[in-house]
Image (tube, rainbow, N blue to C red; front, top):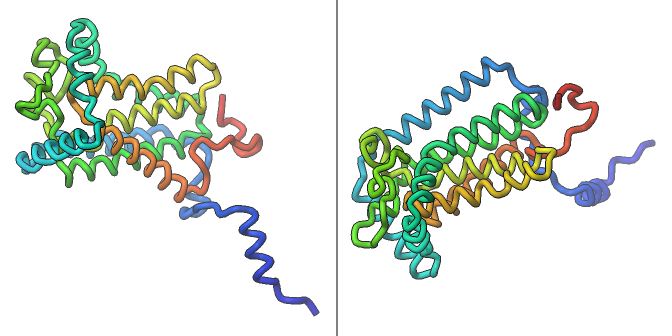
Length: 276
């Protein structure tokens, strides 16, 4: 007569094996192969439309956004984290540097993120779904932050000494300054999507690229972006920390949905054509 399974022994075995979060999705909804290109383009287009709609909607709570910015600045001063003004003034003293940073701020977060997505789809297709899911989830969470926690950038704090580098140097370098300011939400500083996207891009390249120098560049990219967002007075340190936290949450949700880390090594027989 067979004995019933020993629940205590089973539990101990699971404990030794370690608890693994997820997957919450059934196997058929978490394949390793890359999605069809047209499907991915539609999904990406919808996400960008939502991002643009939310990011560029003129917020109704200007007073609240400025109040939050002042509160953040005061809290950073109390905690001695207020390096933004020093970085802003130091960079502004070098004309070519700050103009270059203006262009960096306006363009690279789109160019690099799209480039990494294309590279993933073509060259690291076995990782594409998981890594892309983390990015899209973090971006949606950031949109919620824009909608419910409008926050002004440092350059809007009158009397605090911040320099709006685009206005001062008459450069086209930010959708949030100068002649194009009316087209963009001026109060979408919290969290910093520049940090969300640059950290995602940097981590993806650092984990999945084969050449060492490329991986080093990937690791340096978020640090360069952090310097730029502070130097141009578009974000507080707190905004950057919130962006990093949002991206961490995006990766956590992706792990819960799929049951596997985004950058986990692929089994040889899991997807034969995953890395052409």
